[in-house]
Image 1 (cartoon, rainbow, N blue to C red):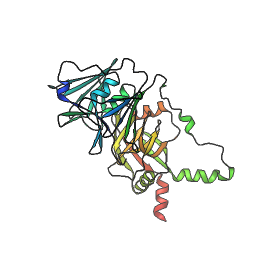
Image 2: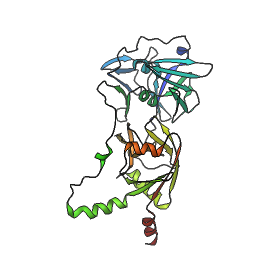
Image 3: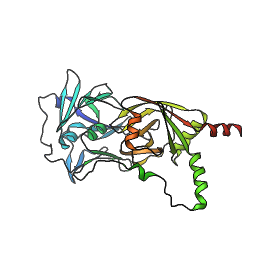
Image 4: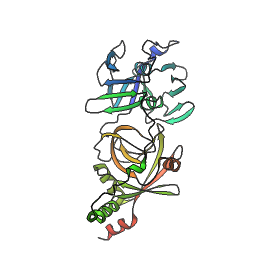
Length: 318
C-alpha cells in the first residue's frame, strides 16, 4: 500500500481524566449512521449534517503515513463511551454490551476479554492518545473505508446491513468459455498456481493479474517463503513478508480466501470480509469459509508459500 492507512483515534488526556465523558454527542439511535472525516478538515459529516469534531479545532492528520482521528467525537457519535485510566495507561471503550480495552505501548487489545492483535501499539503524542479505529469500529459493528483520492474516512452502520457470509462457490471460474480456449485457459491457470502450506494442509491458490502478484511469483520461483501470521480484527491473518513488493492499491471488498498485499510488505489472508485499499495477490481455490477458518485456527500460525516444484525445475533447465 502506498501509504499505511491504519486508522487511529486521537483525544486529549486532560479531557478524559474527569470522572465522566461528555455525552452531548452520543447518538441515541446508531442503527443507521454514517460518519465522514477528511484529512486536515476540522468538521465531520454525520448523516449528511456537518458538525465540528471538537471545540479545539482538531483535524484528522497523517503522521508518518498514519491517519490520526479524534477518539471521543467519533466513538460518542457511534453511540459509545470513552474512559481513561492514567494509572494503568488504559483506554476503555464501551458500546452496548461490547467493551474494548487498549493499553499504551501494547499491541494487544482486549475485546470482551478476548485478545486481539493490533498492527501498531497505541501511543501518546503531544499529550494525545492515538488508538486504532479499524478494530474499534468493526468490533462495534461498523464498516470502515478509506478513499485515498478524496482523503476521506467513512465509518458507517445501517440497520439493513446483513452479516457478510461470502458464498465462495460463486467465485469459481465460469464454464461458459469457448471450447477452443479451454486448454489455453487451463495452461494459464497452472502457470499462475501457487501453494500455501499450513501445518499438514496444503492449499492451492491462483495468482491475481497485478504487479504485486507478478513480483510475488518471481520471489517464489527463487525459493519458498515462510511467514508468521497473526489474527487481526476477527477476519484476517496478517504477517510480514520481509521485503516490499510493488503495489497498485485499489478500493477492495475482500472475501474469505482472498490474499492481498497490505502496506507494501505484509501478506493478508482473509477468512472473513473487509473493505480497504489493497493490492490483490491471489485467491485460495475450492475452499469454504468454515474450512479456511478451521485450517488457519486461532492465534498465531506459520504458513509457507511455494510454486509447483516441477515448474521450478523446468525453469531452471531451460
